[in-house]
Length: 156
Image 1 (cartoon, one colour):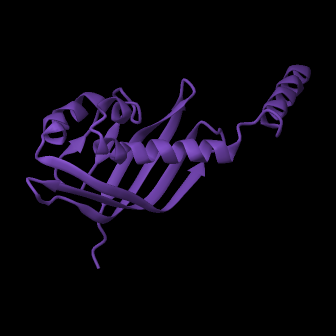
Image 2 (tube, helix red, strand yellow):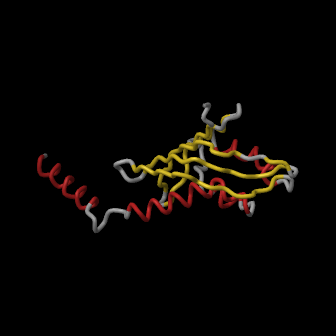
Image 3 (tube, helix red, strand yellow):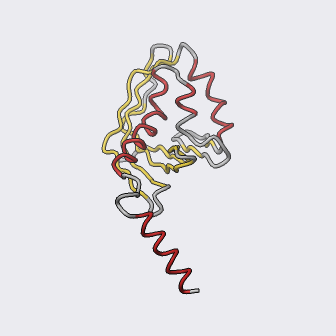
């Protein structure tokens, strides 16, 4: 029994060794790209980019300052007519003070940033400025996706 436990411990240490462990900085860059894609897809209205950046299943949840909570991927599709309308125009977005923290397992991370999501609807501002954005990303089949996210505004 001890021999098997010791063998597993050696395998775990070997997996975590610097030679074989995932490069955290490379992972951080990829996670940043995925997080940015959750908003940035709107520039070119690239739904495949958006869908590729979020969990496409029942685990997905998105909480916004509005009343509606999106609790699974299928609910995301209800907003597509709004976003794809020619009346909705992406202007720019910026992730400020982005922090990414990895879970010990290396397959999950959580993030925080302040988001400026600048858009127009029928030529009028339809933007979120200084929105607090937190979320969880998970590496699935070798690809990072946002599984949970929450947007809010500070009340001073």
